[in-house]
Image (cartoon, rainbow, N blue to C red):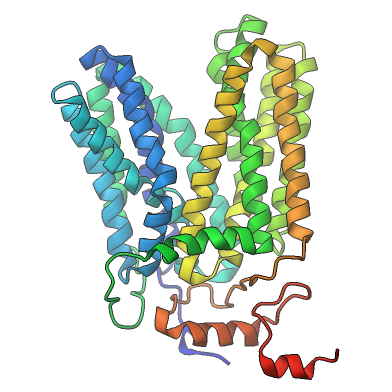
Length: 456
């Protein structure tokens, strides 16, 4: 059955991806750089590094805590262009306001403002990525997700570097203002994307129900491919989160102060190169969940060799090699979420997945800091072991057929709008017709007619 959307052109037109990538890079660079600029601003103007740490915590905690609400709202709002663009622009305005208020007004007020900005932050990461399936046809999505992974990598490199350079040369307040202006510009660019409004009447409820907030989380437990890539990539982040601490210890071991940041820069540059390479040659794009598992194993190998490198330049090259394996891994992770998440909860899946990865990375950094006295070799081997264990856990979760929940199948129309709540039965019937259930993992429980037809 072919509907009118099957032959419709992509919603965003030919310029959709460049506009999207520019907006995403600006917003994510501001998000990464704000963490450095806030600490510098609190130290320069208020003379309180403790306030800087509290501001970063207030900005970061809602990345996880607000992810279900932000995702549920994004999945129900009709005009996604206004919602996402407005949210990103407001995030930039909040950063500029913090630049003006930190050290000049009460600490509680600026902490509350930082927390409010953090509640919008899930839209800058997984929320934006979830729009790609609406903007581009299916045959362009794999390379688009690789390009989106590049925007994350660039933001991770450029954001802190720009904040530190501007904060040192002209003051942290100006640095934070410039970052906020960049995020606001990114939000305004999103208004140019021609996203189709969701069909149907405007929902009467302005806020999602508690059950709506749990639907995305339930899918990450119930669906085999999503479950495997989510928890495997999260466990792998335990090891990746430990690497900044390990870099400090390695810099002392080699008596090379530049390696404190240089090793992580090499890792990020490797990830950037890996994402670009995967964009040019997306191997395994038909089963992206398997690319995630192989990427975890490949990341472990260079990390496990670093303790025996004996030279800081060799260690730097090994960090870059490990990072290059995470580039395809991350691109395939994004493609997996798009492929297997149903439209009704797709943004929730992206925002929750991004929040879980951040949580695991933070936990890895905390554990590495607590165990720093063990030395670099045990920590590096532990980081590598996390990748191997993550791949093993992902493999088990991917092949475990005991889960009876649905395995969502992606519609062949890459930019089809999501159906309203009242059309759920139509969406389910179309999905069952076009994508038969995978053996051992039925798309829906058997109906009474099917149970009579099946021999016992």
